[in-house]
Amino acid sequence: MTKPRRILFARHAQTDWNDLSRYQGRTDVPLNVGGRRQAENLARRLAYWKADRVFSSTLVRARETAEIVMEKMPDPPALELFEDLVELDFGEWEGLSVSEVRQRYGELYERWRDDPASVDPPKGESFDDMIRRVNRAISPILSSDAERVLVICHGGTIRAAVVSLLGAPSSIAWRIRIDNCALFAVDILDGRRSLAFANDALHLFVGDAQAEQIPLLP
Image (cartoon, rainbow, N blue to C red; front, side):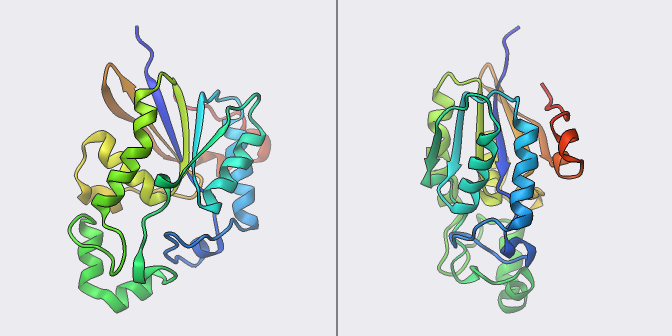
């Protein structure tokens, strides 16, 4: 039986703006102390998952997460940084909290939440443009023979990737919960793509030693 290839997506660890529910987008916010602890437990979870390639967004919160994860990997591959994996540009919403955006932009915000492809954040990036650049980043993964690929990026990036890879409607994007340091796996077998699991963050709710013992689904 042919073995499926796996793309394992991980959202970056926590920042101060995550704690405040602020839209970060392209703003380069570093991990906070709690985020570095999250990344360390993600590293323990993935320590023995042998990745053939590791990709990361160029934004510091993703890159720091990737570097912490790779420190615990025996004989890791080189980290490959892709600007096309950065978060959505939220334009005028950058730095605002969810409640502030909802209060100031009302109907526009609700339409965007219902379907991000229908409207754009003011002076921000369209969801369709984001999907196009995420596809550019994923293209070398799909065309390579790597069986296990780890991609550390952002909530919006993962949503765009899932929508594109699975041929799902854009209206589901903000109905997908993606916690900090959570894992999403897409398997590819004979050209068919399937979601193996989603928002797996069990490693954040156990002790350090237990994090290494939580298996990933085959």
